Image: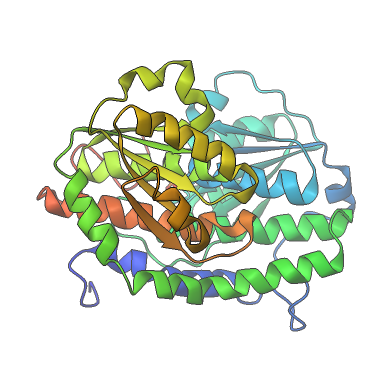
Length: 367
Ligand code: F6R
């Protein structure tokens, strides 16, 4: 049942290229230049009238929503708010009939997310669900559903569901961009071509886990560490940090790199591991200056970046790991993979039950 893998989590990490292909299949037209989402009831008129988007979810699905926000804001130029469901539902959110509410849930059964969906409905909003389970409560209650085709996810730590949610957000953003005319057909075609290359790029990364495995064994001996990044990298390290806590039980914090000097820098001392995700070219120099700040305080830094920056980064970091290059907005679909492998191998090195971490359940149907 684990297909030759030692754990469901590792199997599911390796199923991601297939999950990407399956989630894209039938949603890109034959010319390869347009996204088609025949399942949507949302009309073109409604899409043109959307004044804001709210993305609501819990845990890892919320982290996918953070990437979704970047995708919608940059491709469609509609303001997006993100919220964890347990906060949203109790803060009397401002929702209008021209708000598009997107709920994200692998299981489709998370109690707080379902309650948030109902709260949004009570204000007359159109609710679109991104979920992995067709007949789930959230899929049934939502006005629209984009199903992620990740297949069943057994490990408690979500991997392929998260990355398939990213693919769903990219497809939706391109569709909205086309309807609202915010991206040219050439831009959309370029984006689609880059998306179609992702599964192979992912396969090439999965074929070489050794460097990450060795680094995971190193950090498994620590009790505290930090992740830093800016922009999309910050969104990805939040997921990396959650994954690591969840299955390795190592305490970690993910920081927006520019926030370090507002307090947290005080915690950086000799030998503390810092994982710096530095893939976003537009802010790379800024991230490098934050890397130098922690390096000067003795942190033991691992940078995850693109090949062309490895040599220069190695002047300030101890180790660097290169990931394949894609469009900046698509990079999370690749850069999260070293994070997943890092937490997997750290958990393994600590002798934990990787697929069933303590205190956690796969589906959180209670509040
Ligand atoms: C972490 C994890 C959880 C879930 C969260 C929401 O690896 O799996 O944080 O993402 O409980 O679950 P769903 O997506 O089923 O609503």
